[in-house]
Image 1 (cartoon, rainbow, N blue to C red):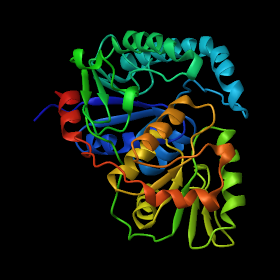
Image 2 (cartoon, rainbow, N blue to C red):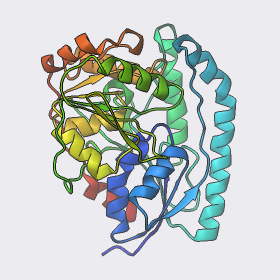
Image 3 (spheres, one colour):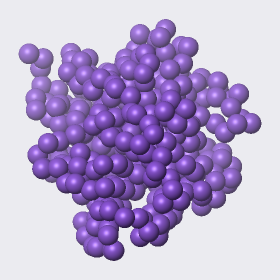
Length: 355
C-alpha cells in the first residue's frame, strides 16, 4: 500500500462545476489520505456542505467578471487579463508557503494554474487544452494553446475528463494535435458526482440554473417567467449555494440549492433537463443518459462552442439565451440522443497521484 499522503486540492470558483467534478476524486482520496481543500465563493460553500469533516482554506482565485451584454464580454476579459495573470502568480507564491507550513507532499489543482509547487509533485485537472475565441479571433486560438502548454509545464500529469477518441464531450477544447504527443496528458473518462442515496425525484422538466453573475440571475428570471406557460411538473434549482430556501410558484417547485445526493435524484427522475452546457453538468447528464436542452451563457465562448458542437453531433439541442422560448424549444429535446461514454477511471487517477 502507498504511504498516507498529505494532499492540497485546489478548486476554481467559476460556477460550481469544477467543485462538483472534483468531489468524487476528493471523496476517494479522503478514504486513505489527509486532504485539505482550497477554494472560494460558491464552490467553497458547496464543498463545505458536502465534505463537512474536511479542512478548508478560503483563498481567492481570478474573480473573472461577466457582463450583461454578450458583445462587451471579450473586451472585458481582455481588460481583466493582466489582473488574472497577477492572481496566478500570487496564488503560486501562496501555495509554496502552504507547502512549507503544512508539509503537503502532493498538490491537485482543478483549473487553478498557479496552484503548483516546485518542491512536490503537482497535478492539473482540466478539459481545456486551448481556449475558444469568437469567429474573427479564432486564429488566435493557437496562442491560447501556447499559453496552456506553458502553464502545463509545472505539472507532472494533466488529467483530461473525457475520452481520447470519438465519441467525446469536449471536442476541440481538449483534442489538439499536441495532446497525443505529450505523455503527461491522460484522458481519464468523464467525471460525474452521481449518488444513489436518495430515491428518484420525478418531474417532467428539471431546470438547473448555474454560472457566474450577472448571467445566472438573468437566466433564472427568464426561466421563471417562461416556465409558467408550460404544462407538467417542474423543478427549478437556482444554484445559489448560500441558501437552502424552498418555494412553490405555479407548477414549479423552486430550490435555492440542494445537496448533491438530492440533485442526483432529481436528474435521475427528470424526463428532461434544461440547463447551461457547463462541462460538469454535461458529464453528469451524459453519465445518466438524460436528454437535455442547453442555453449557453452569453459571451462564454466555451459554452457557446460546446452547445454548437453538441447540436451538430445531435447529442443535445440548444438555443441562445436571447432567443429562448421554452414553449417551443422544449419540443426539440426528444429529437437528439446523448453519446455513450465511459464513466471516470478514478482508480487510475488516484494511483498516479499517490504513487
